[in-house]
Amino acid sequence: MKKGTKKSGENKSQIIRDYAAANPGLGPTQIANALKEQGINAYPALVIQALRGAKEGKSSGAKSTSTKVAKKRGRPAKAKTVKAAKSSASASATDYSILKDTAEFVKKCGGAENAVEAIKIYKQIASILNG
Image (cartoon, rainbow, N blue to C red; front, side, top):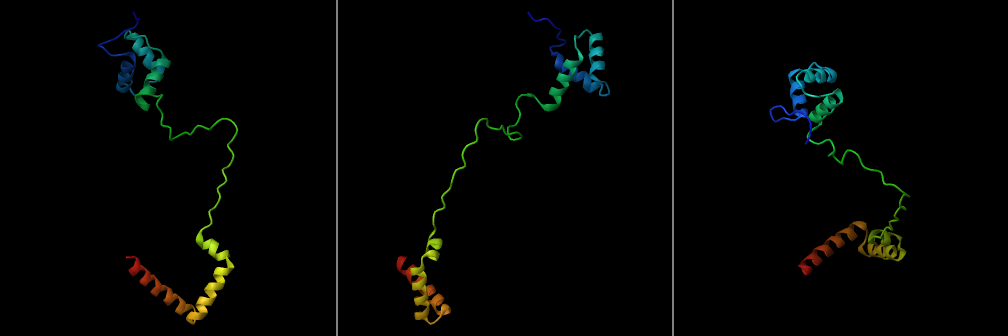
């Protein structure tokens, strides 16, 4: 059976926290000595541990993982190479035949403004036909 004292169904840590709350100006050694006079076997390290648990919360082992990120051990992974997919805009800008055809279209329309208007009309017709 465990040795120790349990006064009024409380454990030592709770007794220490209650005594420290009642006497906020005392240090750990003074609290330990005062509790020893009351018949509770307490020592300064136990007082510090009990008071630390009262400040941090219920469990000191469960710390948030967002504050510290563990560094992975071992050789660093190779950097992944991301191949940029050619978009239609970049492909058409480098394709000279499309530029040549565009220049011919602008000439046939009678200028850039007329070509833009023709494209707008084409979009309207295409949207009506496609529904």
